[in-house]
Image 1 (cartoon, one colour):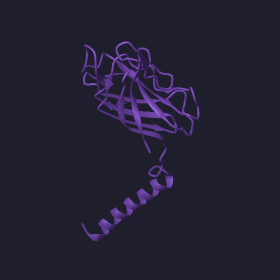
Image 2 (cartoon, rainbow, N blue to C red):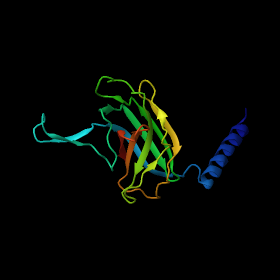
Image 3 (cartoon, rainbow, N blue to C red):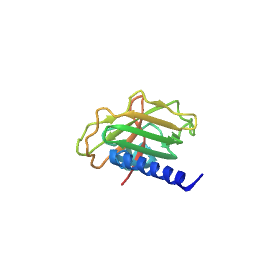
Image 4 (cartoon, rainbow, N blue to C red):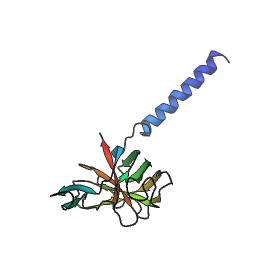
Length: 175
């Protein structure tokens, strides 16, 4: 191949990139919020009084009750777009206590986003959820309902069970 052919290919590549840039496809960053990493639920946030006889305070987050047993999660990555599209990938969401420790409890999960600027409103993926794999892995690819606001302050993301809506894991916000 001569130099003219190489230059022609390079020119076409540059032209293609210019078209994509001008259309905004490559530069568009429509992320509303991101979460990298997860925290499994501990159903008890504190104990009042002597541990053996005291009352336990449930680990309620944004009005959502915790799962009845501890849960652990190895990895969680979630992107929520301005148009409400949510993509979540979780790994190792498993029971961290009880007789079924290390198992998925036969659970299906969904995601809920909370924003301080719209208090009390839950923006959730399909409530039927997606089933956990035997090793606790899952993927959510959905649209939140209702759609989240264009700005979401102090975002909190919970991974919840489709059986009762209790939370099993929370996302760690990424700036």
